[in-house]
Length: 435
Ligand code: SF4
Ligand code: SF4
Image (cartoon, rainbow, N blue to C red; front, side, top):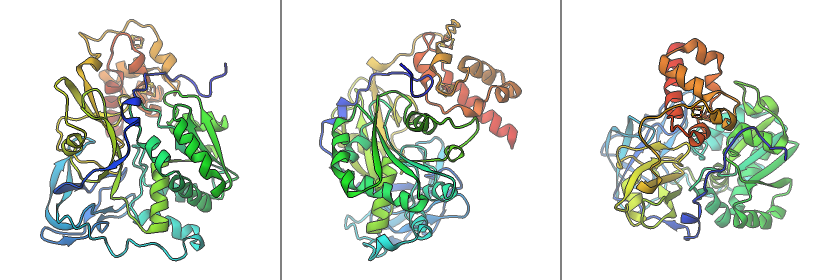
């Protein structure tokens, strides 16, 4: 059988842990710590100071260049603006708000009178002001992606694959709010005027597929494509190849092959921003894994700590091994549960000792499995070796920066070589070298 993209793996899904429990809104916490860096690009500068009263949805940070605003997720009083731990690692300047539990909305958040008459430029402006980023984890500013694709794409793809094991946030979103997802996708169609628009879902989400099918007649011009489940199908370049057969070049972008890809959660957030005037201050988070007592999907306010999210899912089990932000393949292990949920946090994954595959000293037996699994046609074992040796010339020659950090190589490696950790080290070195 011809595969839709090169490499890839079939890890156990574990999605049943959280997919069955109904979606619930988590009660907002007494305090939120909202990072001023929740996107790729320059961090925001605070627009408020300690002692200021703020309303839910109010803009509290903004900046120049590649930067999107951040908004208060509760109403209350700013207690501090200080460095706090960030789920991406290190510290980040954050706005700490004491919740008054009134949820007083910002007056700017109200339904727009004529949303269907807005021009593409006005829609992009709304997307920017609402603080939209890639909510599948990438966190790239959505307004910039939209703007740079204008006039360059003939195909818009909704990325509803959610191919990472354990995560069911987008699945739950599509099952409960399919209309928002498709209306948001239709907004991107108005901006980009593509010849074709495809909503791509993997076949392990039959309820989501059915929900989208029911909504399709209300949003004409969208084709639903159900893809066989395979990781990392939700990576942009792999999804483009699976849907259109086109291959983005090394170092290139989706628009280089005429495509723009938007995540399902981002599309739903765009719908709320355009039609209801709502900024991004909450999102669906999957709290799951064998290390948490009651896995589920929760609507969580941005700035809520991982500890409180885990508590809302019954707390950690006694045999918890580690907690990640994101899934087991691409997620980031956390050293503190005080880190907050951000716009890009799709999952808080709590793994138990039973999932601990680490053993002894890693050893490469030169089996080549990592090369077969790499969807970017790279040579992970050499990337790892040259990263550790600091050989930047070799890393450039081997196209290290094409690595999408999908984790297929490490997943498939029988020698338990920490390939992605090494590769990330090499990427940091290359970026430093470039500076
Ligand atoms: S899969 Fe692991 S053991 Fe096999 S060649 Fe790659 S790094 Fe070496
Ligand atoms: S080298 Fe990068 S792109 Fe290739 S499998 Fe490993 S993590 Fe994925």
